[in-house]
Length: 262
Image 1 (tube, rainbow, N blue to C red):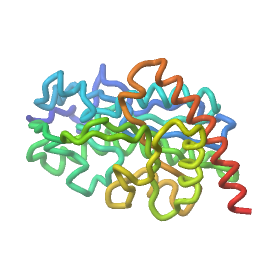
Image 2 (cartoon, rainbow, N blue to C red):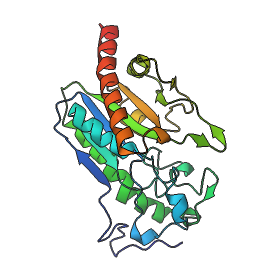
Image 3 (cartoon, rainbow, N blue to C red):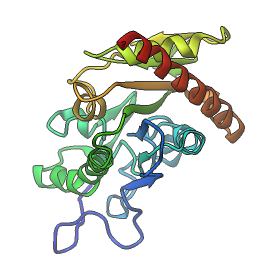
Image 4 (tube, one colour):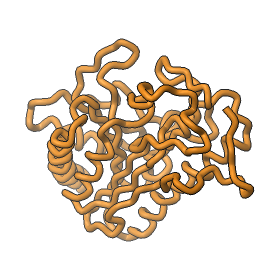
């Protein structure tokens, strides 16, 4: 599928949404929230990428429910929130653009014809229009908080069934080199005793497979990536419930983490 751009080479045009939704950038909370796969928009120039509407409603297009959880959690905590509005099928904003999986040709078992054999200039156009503004917004949000306590929390959701394999965990906490805050968050999420909370399962974080936390946070500030199971946050009431649970767990984890660091 060819890529159509204007004479400046820009991918996005009139009627396309902005690549970033940002809320409460001056929020008082120590937490900064991000949503790398929160949106499912596709630039009009790319059509539907050759993917059916039914497939675009699935988890392959976005992290179902996480935008709603993020907005509610931001309000509860008075925390800055930066959300990506475009589908991960256009470009994955939690992958280094230099790797092939940045723009997938196969997602789970679904072929993405519009991503086949994309020339370098077209990959660059997607990065310039979507990936770079999103990460610039995160960097600017963090920079304006210089000198303030800051904990970065990347919000994601996971499908309850992947390639036919069911997932029993309710939520997962991911980390790479600096696990201290993430482990405190996993402990806090488990404390009510009614949910299975895993660590680095079904995914593990690394600089090879992730971008937001390794680039913006590790070595600079406490951080964690949270995965919520999508069937548990599919409806607004469920999103409210998990936002409340996460807000309480984050506050508790901050206390646990601070005690560990004394």
